[in-house]
Length: 164
Image (cartoon, rainbow, N blue to C red; front, side, top):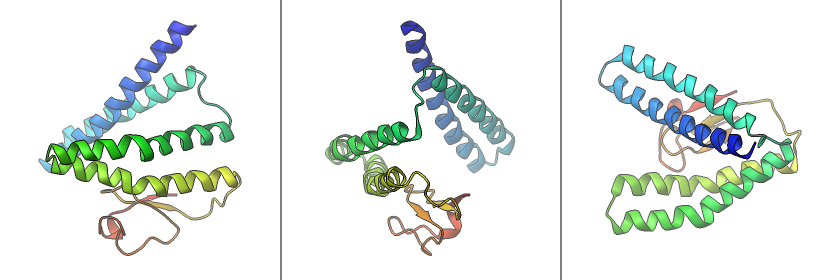
């Protein structure tokens, strides 16, 4: 079974990466006015997401809500404290402006993510009424009533994605 779990994990990672890559490709196709190709990339992305979730579940690594929140908290704290700071410094040294901005957004939003996970850990029966709003540029998360503009990157709230 150990080899199967390794194989499932590898394919989970591969499919998860493909999902995100194909969504980025769809955006690029949209910007070029190629809506048919963009739609095909979105279909491919959804298919890859289905596979990734199936593979991940089959590994047996999906646990109770409490354990899943603990894992999410540990991963996000690691990213915030260890991964992002070093990566931002690398981008600064290499004068990689776009990469630096992307990494800095991840670093800036990490406390928001950590706080939301902590809230869920402290109250697993937390309020489900209301929507979350996600900034499409920096990934900021706001609940119920978002600011008129993202406090991190200034994007207008009309651009946010609603998660209800």
